[in-house]
Structure formats: structure tokens, C-alpha cells
Length: 103
Image (cartoon, rainbow, N blue to C red; front, side, top):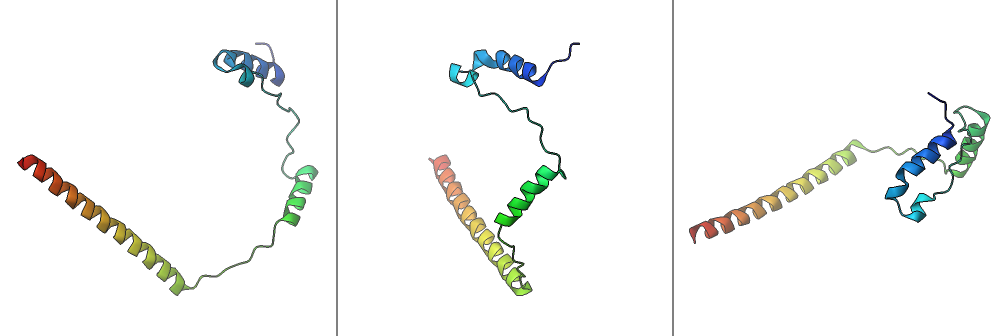
């Protein structure tokens, strides 16, 4: 089997799919074959350093147990409200179907 370069492979793939795409889609810009920096290299460390300079410092926030319990209670209350509404809806649908069967 002959070795092919990434460019040749991309060209072959583009040719294989050219019949299913519009002419505008078939002529996509070339893909960069530049090497991706390996994590831990100087390039990625430089980028990471710049990203850290831009990011605001994170604040640690503690949540009290009472606040957590209150939030959990609110979630449960909302779930209960939704279940009650679903039950009411099902009861109405049941009544409607019974009326239709009686007619």
C-alpha cells in the first residue's frame, strides 16, 4: 500500500464528497497542517500564561448547610407542583375520554 500525505488524503476525500455538495461547499479553504503544540511545550505554556493573565481571579464561595437545605426544599416544592399539574391534566383527559366512550 502506497503512503499518502495528509494533503493527498484530504484531496481524495474532498473529491469523494464533491458530488453531494454544492459547488460553494466543495471548494472549502485548505486545512492548516501546522503541528499542534504538545502540552507542556513552551508554545502552550506561553498561551496558557496569557490566558491566565486575562482571566479574573476566582472567588471561593461557601454555601451554608441551611442554604443548601432551603434550595433542595425549593426544588422539591417545584417538582411537587409539576406533578400536581400533571395529575390534574391526566384526570381531565380521563374524564374527557370517559365522556367520549359513553356517547
